[in-house]
Amino acid sequence: MFTTLKERALQTKFELRSRCAATPWLAPLHQATVWWTQWKMRGHIDLRECQVQPDTELVIDGFQGSGNSFATVAFKSCQQRPVRLAHHLHAPAQIIKAVRQDVPVLVTLRDPSDAVVSLISRWPYVGLEQGLRAYIRFYEALTPYLNRMVVSPFAMTTGPIDQVFDAVNATFGSDFAVFDPTEANVARIRSKTTLDTEAETQRCRDKAALRAQITHPRYRALRGRAEEIHALWQQRGVSDRRRALSS
Image (cartoon, rainbow, N blue to C red; front, side):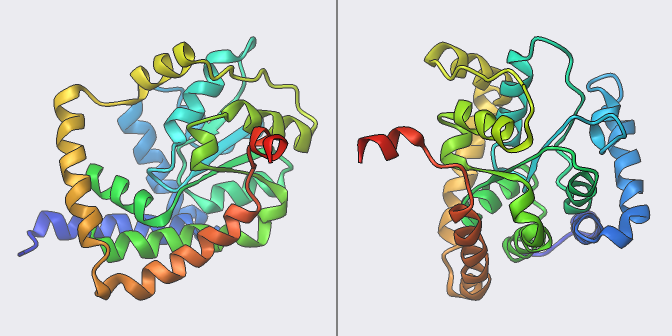
């Protein structure tokens, strides 16, 4: 398959952003992407939530396709006061900044193949190899700070996320309100974070094809490294108390 000049430009943009976002000393370069995001999203979101600010109270972030939107909307939906969030940064450098400033951090986590497939179903110009390398780069940059953040595995983010928010409060001594993951509440959040039916149907078809492609032997080494990182992080993630009680 031939790559167009536009696709190559977008791939280069993604690569530069990924590298700058994972490297604290490249923060000035990454700041340009923050400004670009703020300009694109003006009128849609609070632009102060696009980066860690002096008054940031909580960071919710993770690799793309890891349930960041669900976690953010669920958190916001149940707060009884305005909470200054930073979210959807997809930037280890910003997370490291928050950690160093003692800002509570919640990082979402998902199996690398599933996360990369989800990413590429939204941004088709990103290659599977490029996506896997970005996943590795993201979590490797944050691994030295693992004991200073709360990790939410995908099953927790999309399931008993109340336990994740409980863990945030317990870890950081905060008093954020906790989302009640009833069937009705979860359905309401999902309605705000999913695409329209036609677009979602196409994404499902794209994901099925990508899942088959990512198992190709050419990606074995990168998948293996990404899965090692995922296993390490999974061990440090919030676990379901209900399973522990029933076992």
